[in-house]
Image (tube, rainbow, N blue to C red; front, side):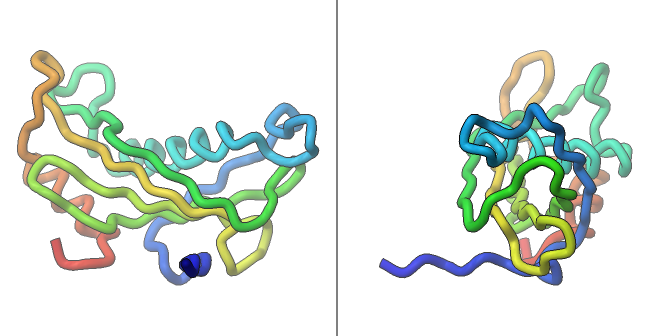
Amino acid sequence: MSRTPPGRRADYRYFSAVTTRWRDNDMYGHMNNAVYFSFFDTAVSHFEVERNMIDYTNGDVIGVAAETTCRYFSELGFPDRVLVGLRVGHLGRSSVRYEMAMFRNDDDIAAAEGHFVNVFVDRATMRPVPIPDAMRAILQTIAVSES
């Protein structure tokens, strides 16, 4: 089975710089796998906050994680500079597939790639709801395929 090669910066529509810290390294001298997911989550949150997409504390509609993945291609660790690329790979009725990649320093090839599937739910009932039109329009600005 062949493995899909890592993406390039040009494959992504939005970028968020995330600073590595000494504590992100594990005993093997590279960034611990849990930190990758934290950086992905930070990039998604930056995008949503910068665009006033979700009111995390009082909004009626919030996004919850339904699926997460990460594929590792090369090491990251302190003191690397990390740029997280973000795009929407699929936009459903009540869910979005955020696709992310981490780029080390000035590298053009991703060191890691992953995705989150977030389902939008009613805060009170925690049941899926259609993505509000305003949110959908924001998500479409970084979409890479017809949804």
